[in-house]
Image (cartoon, helix red, strand yellow):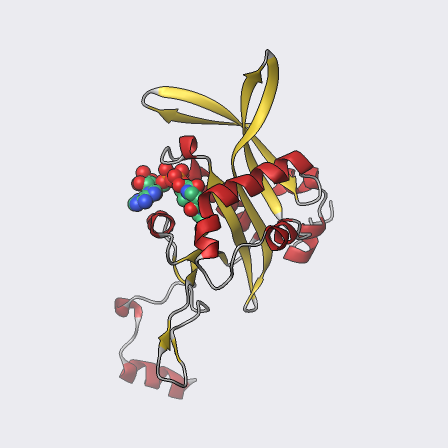
Length: 239
Ligand SMILES: CC(C)(COP(=O)(O)OP(=O)(O)OC[C@H]1O[C@@H](n2cnc3c(N)ncnc32)[C@H](O)[C@@H]1OP(=O)(O)O)[C@@H](O)C(=O)NCCC(=O)NCCS
């Protein structure tokens, strides 16, 4: 009998990219999206923080800067290229890239139109798939592409057997919060709560941690399945 494949997120994180892709990422290399009746193909590519090319990571950074740097600047975290780049190079981080084929001066070119980065990791002792970033260029937004990227990440999570998908979002990013809510994300139990400072001022965190269960909870018995307590007691006594 063939040995059973390794499980556990530490093991999955050590898989070389082609094996990770074969086991956990069941998608073709093209993602088509339809807008106003026109179907457009995008190239879909899975990379790790060590295999992603310098120009691709720069393109991802530029997308984050254009969509979210203002939210970072307005937050307690602040905006720092060095810090963001360091995070983007974290060892177990993986990237789902969406690339657009174009032509520049008659030469074929590829640009990154969007990406989602994620990590299989632990959060509060739970195995999770954590979405670090999801960003699309303005031309790709609102066409169902973000939802498809999130579904791909969740599928990686399901195939890895993790409990939930998680992410952090600035509270100021109302559009993203509505998007996550639409996809079934709710405030996680580990999301920071408002706290009262010694001077009485209540400090609200400027970010929220959201999650979505990927494995069904053990089904609780329905009311009709529960035996009346007298019967239950009888059974216990008899046992
Ligand atoms: C947030 C983002 C990734 C969403 O991706 P998207 O492709 O624009 O969203 P989709 O078109 O896939 O929308 C999916 C669903 O969410 C809903 N939705 C999306 N944005 C919404 C909004 N602002 N309000 C209400 N619903 C919204 C859509 O109606 C859709 O619902 P449906 O499945 O019933 O049709 C994308 O808009 C983006 O890159 N924004 C800028 C970067 C950003 O803020 N990233 C998040 C950082 S935390």
